[in-house]
Every structure is written in C-alpha cells, then in structure tokens.
Length: 180
Image (tube, rainbow, N blue to C red; front, side):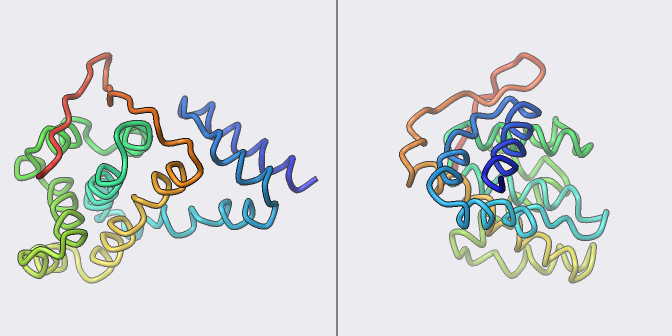
C-alpha cells in the first residue's frame, strides 16, 4: 500500500513537470524504506526560508544542480523557479555564464559555485547575502547549494543519468556555459 502511494505521488510530480522520474520509481520498487526517505528529501532540498531569499535560493540550487547534471534536473529546477515567480531572464543569465548580471539570482548562483569549489571569494559572497537579507538567507543559500546535486547523483548512481538534454524556456534552447 505504501509503495503504491509513493509511486502515485512520484508519477503526479513527474507529470506536473514533464520530468522522467523513473529512477525514483526504481528506488521505491527496490525498497519502500528507501522510498520513504526519498519522499522526505524535499524537506531539506526545498527549504525556502524567508521570502526575501527566494531569488538567492533559486540561483544557488540552479548552480548546484548544474554542477551535477547535464540537463533534465537543471530543466526541472529552472521550471520550478519560474513557477515560484523567479524572473526567467535572470536564471537564463546564470546559465549563459553571466551571473554578475542576474541580481539576487546571480548572487545565489555565485554563492553556490564558490561553496562547491571552496573558492576564496566565498566569504565575501556569504557576507553580502547576510548584509542584504540576514543570516536566514545565508542558511537558505547553504541548503540550496548543498542540495542541488543530490538528485543528479542518485540518477547517475542508479544508471538513469546517461541522457543529456537541452534546457529550454519559452521554446528556446538555452546554451549553457559551465564554468571551467
């Protein structure tokens, strides 16, 4: 019974976002216990914090997901951010390698990149987020930067991560510029 409920929930999510969630179904089919833990993961990955941190979170989770994925999860994160009213043009700027031109979204994007790379400018970016929006926004950025790579790693580890795809918005393929 629990297995069927989990799978139905996953299928609704997949249909809502036109997302291939076969790896999630595989987890549930393999272990209901693992499926329950997977179902709880959004408590961590979707922590949004204060409304003022919305764009910072979107940028940070986008950068983190981009670091671990070549398309489907990035598309999902992009679509969810747009659904949350994050300006698409700012997300596109980040994907095109111009986070400095993407306001708060870009600030979150640069934060995640710096945290993942242990970059020397991490402290400066963290301090800027805290100065603008307080410590709760830093916590949101940390959760987003650390959580975006979870699903791509799950997919690849289970053998479902071989397919790359383009990220699209409004019928246009976005050329992604990954940092080197």
